[in-house]
Length: 217
Image 1 (cartoon, helix red, strand yellow):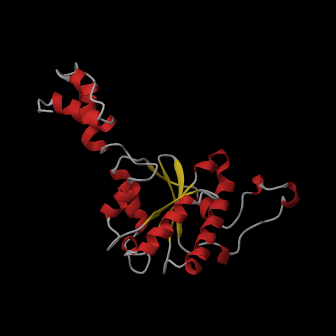
Image 2 (cartoon, one colour; image 1 turned 90 degrees about the horizontal axis):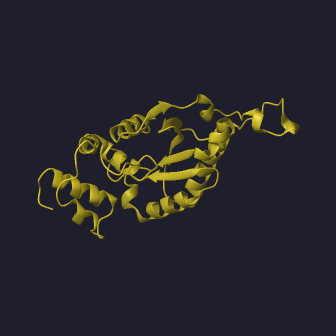
């Protein structure tokens, strides 16, 4: 999904998701089509080829599965004015409605990731608009990636870190160390750490690892 000579944003998001430990798979091509799944439609229209016109659907949209959840990925182009973004959002909601018709029991799990233009993060109007989009749960859950000065792998990871695939700690860095600790007795001082009411779960893990490494807490 390249826009105006920019890098392939779908590939960038796939790579970022893999980098934080998420499972990534291709989604059904039906999610991107213009035809509804007739099995979910009423008897009154069964047998017809009900579909949306191309101008009712977004020109840039891709589909992917992250941690087993279906995700539509699209871009928002132009200014943050409602007159510009409103029609684009309507097209993405139409696409999401078609996708839901093919997902069956998985329909409530559909997510829509929308990518704003470069510099959107530095624009107060874009930040406000993104907050409004994310608060609207019609058809599916939506989240907006607002890049600062460019689309970059770091920006992609930061965006995904606030989505449903976020991990509480970097999987590659911590999983092996925690697995090692599972085979050991708890280090001296663990009782005091557990009694520290100021520590959240991540802080507790950090302190236990520090004790195991012989570091001063």
